[in-house]
Amino acid sequence: MTSTAILEVRDIRKTFTASGRTVHALNGVSLSLEKGETLGIIGESGSGKSTLGRIAVGLDTATSGSLLVEGERLDVLSPSLRREKLRKCQMIFQDPYSSLNPRLTVGRQIGEGLFASGVSDWREIRGTVADLLERVGLKREFAERYPHEFSGGQRQRIAIARALAPGPEIVVADEPVSALDVSIQAQILDLLAEIGRESLLSYLFISHDMAVVARLCDRIAVMHRGRVVESGPVAAVIENPQHPYTRNLLDAVPRFGRRRAGGKPTPVELPRHEDGDAFVAVSEGHLVLQAGGLRAAKTV
Amino acid sequence: MTSTTVTAATLRSLPFTVILGTGLALLIIAAALLAPYLAPFDPMRMAAGPRLAAPSAAHLFGTDEFGRDLLSRVLMGGRLSLGIGVAAVVSGLAIGGLLGLLAAFSGRLVQAVLLRVIDVLYSFPDTLIALALVAFLGPGIENATLAIAISLVPFYARVTYGLAAAERAKPYIEAAQLAGVRPGRLVRVHVMPNIGQSLIVMGTLGFSSAILSAAGLSFLGLGVQPPSPEWGAILASGRNYITKAPWILLFPGVAICLTVLSFNLIGDSLRDLVDPRRKGRP
Image 1 (tube, chains in turn green, blue):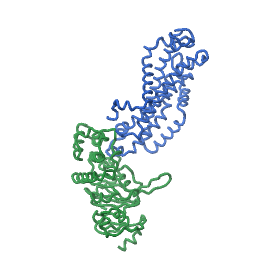
Image 2: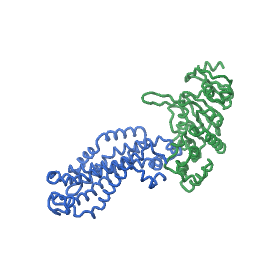
Image 3: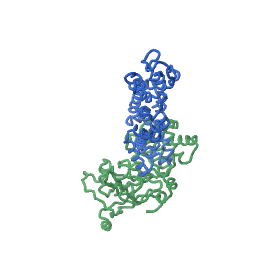
Image 4: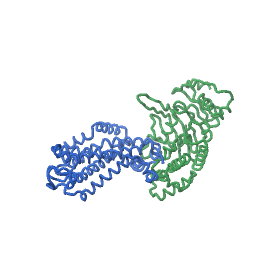
């Protein structure tokens, strides 16, 4: 992988110990996110996609492996430089209710990010906050209100404005629309796409919903049991899924399931991948994890 | 903002116990504050009346073994008891709260050590801790207050830790961390407003326990020293005359009971009101 990527994870592993049992959440995940790109991470709950997102913004630390922001390894930086780099990585959370502080005005919450990045004049901050609110499709005067006065969709817009306040280049969106009404989902997705284009943001878009990912993303990485099993351009992966797990996921979406080959989905044995398994190129940029390691790779 | 606005409707919807508790507490506080004006006699003046006189028009609560007016002593004693309670709760809550916050927002090792120490201390009854501390510090009103404050620290630290740790796990705190908010500001601006209400409720609950400890220590002769009129101290000096003059024990005893009852009523009801499960609702 080249170092032009704005965000890169290399062989990230994460193990949790819960009541004596060891859980391997991530088993060596390597991904890179190019500038201005939207990379969708898709997988079922427990596949490790959220853990990956949390590690990418520094809310969690990996057990091993490294995280690179703009080509620099964070683990070798000094704490203050690391904070600096991590401020470029912001996150939009799934639940628009628990992700907003019920006791602070909306303006205050958005403004905290500006204050922390060195703007100390609250009059100036208030102006920028109003601009941000306008940018996410809300009224400037909403800054004086409290979160409970807003609907779920409006709250998620506020959360987006808050994520934008520190001037991020990378935004990790962890299931940002799955808690919203279907009618609101499209609006929020369009808003994310629009803001991404305007500000040249790079998104790491985590979702379990293939339709949502297909709508917004340039590339997809499919995760299963803590590994990336298939990745590539959205069209290539959806039209020509190679990994049995990807096919399962697509079959679960009526629109995509029908498009492929017709017929009923047949239950398949999902391969259990080992650390030695290698990726095989299907087409330009479209990789699939092949069980059986290098031996299998040679046959393709 | 909206959640703290008191309207007539919210007042009506308050449970009866809150109204009873608050009314009683306000009465007791008013009596303590106005004691110098309300007290018919100087509480220290001996032979203000006959010795061990039963309650009468001249001495509503009767007199004690030195002929001091008991009503005046109970009123003035309230000032001491409540004063010790307030001072102990405020300082106990401040120290315990800081320790709890420290435990909730520090690294794993510091947290583990702090929590274990707090747990061990919390397993002792607070009156016992206060008693041991006074035995060590020596008797007197200042030492008793300090000892009671320290005895409340484990309780407040534990409660604050629980509340703060629950807040810390919420995404809005993580979002603030991502925005680059430093730990001190995070606690002050983002965490405290969310747990302050609950801490005030815990303050009222600790208050009655502090009053009891103060009375207990004074009764044992370790707190307020005679001839100062403190409820526990009055009880202690009156216990020799329980058969001849039971009113010496009755009135300060009732005062202690009512104070503890009123603050427990307020604390319990408020605790239900700020229950986390009801929080966040408009």
